[in-house]
Length: 331
Image (cartoon, rainbow, N blue to C red):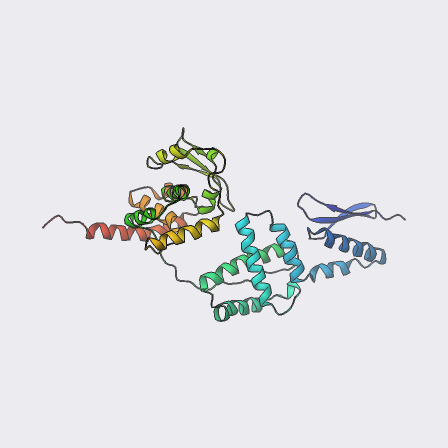
């Protein structure tokens, strides 16, 4: 009897074997986007099928090595935002360097993850916030392994405890001092958009002049990662700045990491200890201090959960204290 069996790549990028058994068409996922791996598994499947030993292929899929899996994962992730893809590359290389040998992915246990955590803290002297970033990336990677049926449970069970500090926001004087140190007009525009809209750095980097609607006084923020698309009002302070600079195409030529480095140098020169993301915190804090409704601020910032916006409540309390301390009614 003739054997009907073919190797097919579906729209999701995964390779499948399609074959007929007892007159019925069947599909078997090879759980890989790598063509060379798919061809090898296809040939093995055909051989095992003819020998009546198909279950051995399932055993092989369950024993996929860590190195084979991350090769497949990075191929799958290559279409992600460049900054995200680079973060995955960095963390996976770091974790692979920690492993003493190339284990089957199902042998990577919670104990190994805990040992990696201690290695980062004690050997590499990483701070808890850095280790937690690694663990979040690894958790996402292992979740994909679960989705592809390579493992049953995620070995990343917990993050390190961290003190939750209120967001750092800049005073009007600190903002002024930073702008006094900016010499590049293009970067000055970048920072003005950041502090007057509260947009994330990646959102600003991806901004085009076509997204800036001066007729409606709105900026269209395109979807990034898990964040939804949204519109942000253009303030009277920002409008003349955008009118003067108005052009076509992409507004800024930089990568997110580039603008962060540029800002850090400028802030240091201004004597202000802060990060680029603190401009977003500053926008939100000063907006709420001016009396804006917290739900409105949530929409402008693009927070999916109101609890995220509520972290600025502490900063507002500090602003209130400062206002009362500066009040002089009776001399």
